[in-house]
Length: 240
Image (cartoon, rainbow, N blue to C red):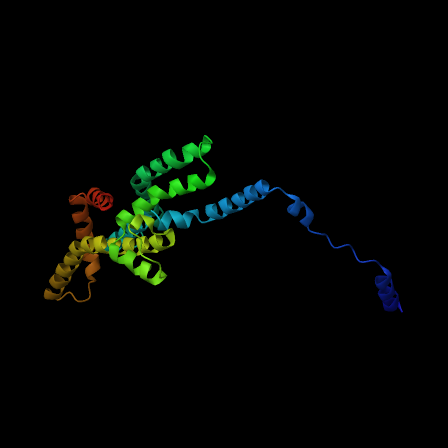
């Protein structure tokens, strides 16, 4: 009986009104207001992708890979820690990219803030220094690969290529350059490992891990040759 009364009361009660979307306000908005809203949304989306853009479209990728290989070559797993390596890679990235960012500020951001150019012109001008930097580091073979896969007509100059072709070509070129430099860094430490392992085997010390003996020698070699100075110098000068 009580259940029947409850069902009857629920059936007789009016359902709450469903809220309506303000479609009329959106349709009545001026085009300039809609463009401003779209720019804000796109700006927020770009800010959310800023870490990925910083890593992939700058010198950060090559630097952090080389530093990771250096730590493996030394045989120390957590020294320097990841925080230190990433921080050093970021500072070197800021140093290397400073001329590019200065050009972007002078050619695009400054004039746009002073209302001398439009938003579209500012974006086009800002992409020019970044495109020039990526093209200087990108191999022609990598560019030709993505031009062929994108099935576009090859332009007269590489500066006329779209960004969706330049960016992946730049990334794989950076990976190749990083592995080449890492291989050169790895060789001296590999030689020390081989010498120590051969010496231990000749003395019959099969149960002693070679890494235990070679680690102090590798650290000593790295300190004696001022390894951080040579490494940072080589990495910075590897960018054109």
